[in-house]
Amino acid sequence: MAVASSADRLRVPFAAFTTVLLLAAAVPAQAEPKPSVKRLKKELATLQKDSDKLITEYYDSRIASQQADKAEKAAREKLAAAQETYDLRSTELREMAIARYTGGEPGTIGLLTARQEATTLLGRMALTQHLIDEQDAMLRGHAEVRDARKRAEDEAAARADELERTVEDLEGRKKKAEKQIEKIKDKIDQLYTAPGARPDGTFVPQLPTGSDNITPRMQLVKQLIQERFEVPYGIGCYRAIQDGGEHPLGRACDFMLSRGGAMPSAAELKRGDEIAAWAIKNARRLGIMYIIYRQRIWHVRGGGWRTMSDRGGATANHYDHPHISVY
Image (tube, rainbow, N blue to C red; front, top):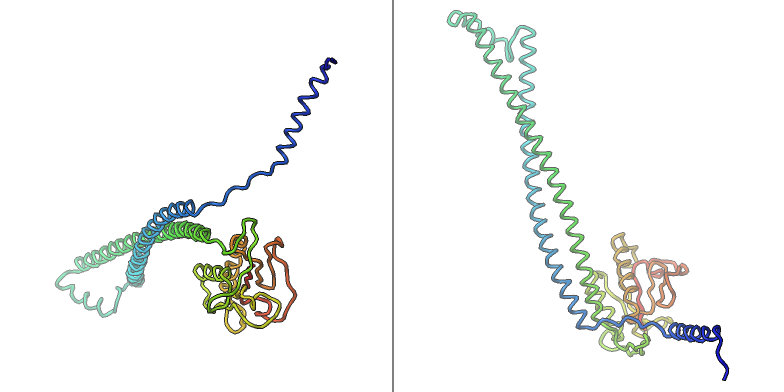
């Protein structure tokens, strides 16, 4: 019996080790299992609980912002009144300064004449002291008005800063709440599965049903979009014209953004973008085959948007509506 050499003894374990590695590489990695309805509902309940907290904080922030807005308006009104008084006193002081420089008194010369005629009773010195006292009182009054105006100005600035802070806080809380609500919408969407779906991701053909003559799969997509987005100009689905598309098969809907072929506004185009993005996000789960919007087509197996040829109009080029077709 031959004795194995040292090299042979080393070679056998190495070969076995290599085989193990190759076998391990050949075994496909298991995909993460789809979440069950029970798990989705549990996650949804957590999201809704957090959402209630965010909405409460947003509500409190709204109240604080409204109070800050009222305080800021009151401070501005107070400042305007103080400014008016300040301007009036400043005018009186200027008149007094001019009168003293010219040897007169603010007001009419007749007033000075009347006072000079009264010197027989008061005496010239007493009248002079009286005028000095009046001037001192006017100066003190002006200083008080000036200080009151400064206080009103400082308060108005402080209230304006407070209002700015509360508005920023309110906007931040609003965005947080909106993001949470968006998560809840996504989680609710995941509770729905397109009817007729096979385990391998393909879809069994369906017959149109109901009064709108569309398939159950198209009906689900239409329902979810109606619940999630505003479609004020209607949804057109089945039509009998055989144009080679899915409309006469009950497998397509147009979600109108404007009326009568008019080019949609910027806000309406944005809503169309949101509908198209939602459809792409949920395409594989809901059996969406392709989307046409803004002279572009997206196919679930195509890997991105592709530009389409110009068909000569807002409706023909799908600028006034996203078109969604299902399997």
